[in-house]
Amino acid sequence: MNQWENALSDLDEVAGLLDIPEEYIVILKNPRRSLIVSLPVRMDDGRVEVFQGFRVQHSLDRGPAKGGLRYHPGVTLDEMKALAMLMTWKCALVKIPYGGAKGGVICEPQGMSHGELERLTRRYTSEVGIILGPEKDIPAPDVNTNPQIMAWIMDTYSANVGYSVPEVVTGKPTEIGGSEGRFDATARGVISTIEEACRVTGTTLEGSTMAVQGAGNVGGNVAKLATDKGAKVVALSDVSGGVYNPDGLNLWAVAARILKTGTVCDTPNCENITNEELLALDVDILVPAALGGTITMDNVGAVKARMVAEAANAPIVPEAERALFDRDIFVIPDILCNAGGVTVSYFEWVQNIQSLLWKEEDVYEKLHEIMVYAFYRVLELGKQRGINMRAAAMVLAVDRVTKAIKARGLYP
Image (spheres, rainbow, N blue to C red):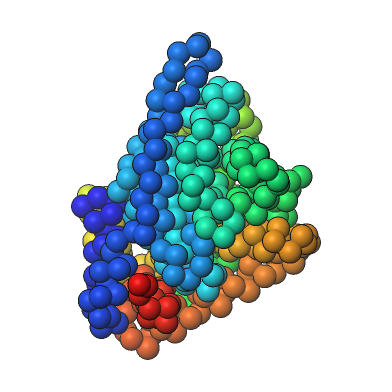
């Protein structure tokens, strides 16, 4: 099954647990809007290349749509639909007043210049601007997008409406209204849930061994924060492969290698490993922080970690995740584990609307409070119903969205 079929399968499973009337399931299975756009961009050599872009809004029942924008050659409409649905559940789970959205452009950003990326971003913003807005849909960074790209979106949207609208995006530079603490917010949320999972399983993050798949913003910051808290990060990878040192990685050396070559591979005093080998390492905590669908029924049997924290979106296919639960491996589901990013995005949106600026320590404190509260709500519900963490997280989220649909009714 592809990601969209997996998302629908998860919804069907939860619908059975909640005994939701079919009329609500039909609504939840159909994204509110799916926009496909063609993006003609003049490249640096003078030729015009046409890219394809998407913006999917899954639900608007609890508030405006919220979700990231990714640039990747593997972007598909089904992937955008699945990730928009996941965003709906994620926002509901942490009780943020948003619905879910996701956007993407089929491109190879590593092969594009700064100017080409700017022209692509501004064209995308102009084309999907009919459904964007601080009261409609608020994009954020995702795979291969960053604060600079958010700044271009904000500027393009603002130019089109005739005044500055910082609250139209989140994850932008602090100079134009970005929030303190947004850069590593997703990773901090991951660490908060891992710490609580360690607590309830009778272990500690300090002294634990960890392998992280994905050396980008989320994975790299998870590795750094975990190391700061006394964990031993023994492996880290990117799309080209990974590096391993049983005594713990020197993250400064890894970062220097990335800056020099664009990859973690061949970091001094480390052994090069594949991504498959990283997933099979005998560690206490495995953090898949790359793309979706990396742990499948083909490789789940090789996973030896005692805990898996889903820092990426849908990194484990449903059947493989159930196999991990059956082996008593503690899995922190993605809609809980990586909700720190959208939580601080919400903080940024609120600050922009109110023309306020919160201190970094206040952002971190509020983030930790929300993540811990959500973690224990999921844990308690799971124990009450005798279901795993994924099912419990979905039950909480889907129930909240269903109640919102019921309260609002159908119009006309």
